[in-house]
Length: 224
Image (cartoon, rainbow, N blue to C red; front, side):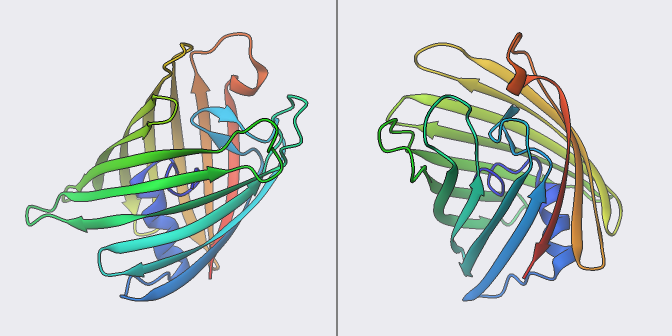
């Protein structure tokens, strides 16, 4: 999903998962719900700078994972699209040297946009490594074979305590039809009373587009 697979850093994801007690045992189902002040994906608001309610379900079994995730959206473009539903699956594990890897597919579906045909598929590849002392780094590549678009993202996070960390990301979106741009984020994540909290600054190098302006986003989440 745009939120979990694209979600902004490996550290932020790990904190939210650990805080809510989501287990990584084989053959296990889990769920998640969230409310965010603005659904931002790759630096651009998908909810027309408004609140969004989000949630999903995940299944893990050894290296295999699969899940689905949904959010309300508002592209403010005259289309009827008001919901995004993502379906994803793949394989993830760790090499003997501690480097984690993840390969998978993501299918982005916009049920109310049949006339606009927003649906697309991405192939994902990711690597990550956590150093002693709490520093984690990662890199992700997403490729849309249908439209020949590619997104490359690099992340770094640092765990200051067991349930508080900071992280940063820099991504570049390359479009076959032109309009490439770069985005970045800086955030802090923590947990309390079973809830995850993420406060994040987003920015892009796009000028003159409101939904791509700099912004600060607060997301409150809970895993089930």
